[in-house]
Image 1 (tube, rainbow, N blue to C red):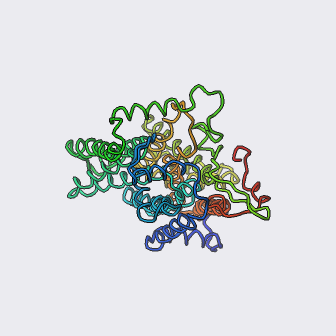
Image 2: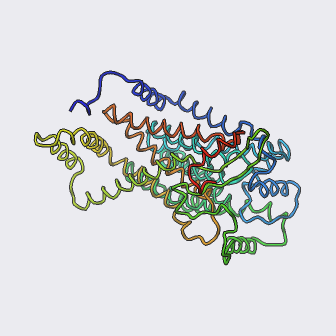
Image 3: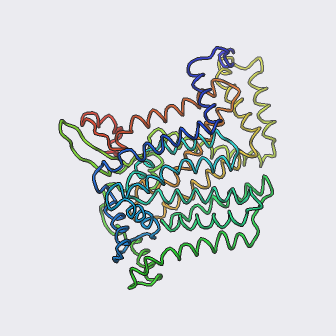
Length: 479
């Protein structure tokens, strides 16, 4: 039975685990490390990959149209193009000019998400791991390095979640933070309408605050801050666009946008784009998107692949299933009116009975101990898991109703909550009293980090050998 007991001798991996846990609990060093890697990977050589990559054929041009007062039709609200235009205004119409604001947004996203998770849960390890998983995702990295708009949905959406927590925690400043929440929600919707899904997260946060602390917004704050302010922001941000394009009023413009999305690819026997992918495939990372490919001398290639970190995606999918199982288990236990702690205690008593198999004990006992430790914190864990699952579903499941051509990058808002679910599980493993269990958590973190470094060349467009490229393409559908 000594195999499952915590060993007194510190192995190198145990020391690695302790250092990771220490970093997660010391924000000055831990957050600085996140910021350093986030800004470094997103800003490094951002003007070194072609002048136009993927949808940069549209958005920087639209931004330039706004600066010049030239008419345009865009199938999305204009806010993100205004921001890109601001970058062009400072640094000119060149790759650096129309990419640096997006790189800034992508660099801030993990830091904002860290602060949100920390303010929500008071769990620094969960916040730190979530921030790191966002930094080490390939798709979020690629989308942050070009003049594209999807990263702004996440930036403003996660800011709305953070501001909602602050509104509920700071009663003396509640009106202020509620208004800012509404502005950030309106800003996310003003990038793409899919930002509406962040409303589900706001509701879950409100439910947690009421259940745990009896904190809530009053009716006026809800109506003004969370309904009127986002709607007002959304319509006001259209004013510059309408001034440049006076031939359509706001309602006709929206009818045309809706028609564009409804009819995109409908009635065609073949996909209108080679990288279209069904919504259910995103979790498994079946079909990434090639953003740029160019051959170089000496059998070298420069390849930018909008592909998530494969091991991060697959581990996050498992984490979502575990979290869903925990929620269903809670429901079943509640229906049976059986106290969870008593259930776990009975499990430990059963497996430590003298007649229980010693070999089986080595494998089962750590799991039961871990489940017992989870149940002791179940009241808060329930809401955190519910928040992650509900937010993930809100951003992912509506795409099952879409008839148009859709892409992996539509999964980006949902992926953040999948990463948060994985981070929550790893942080829970780190809190275990058993060294072996803590080591499992560190192994997951190390696996994600190694995968990030392995695929980094095709995230940031480093020249690589054409013979090495097939080693990175594990699935045929990735090509």
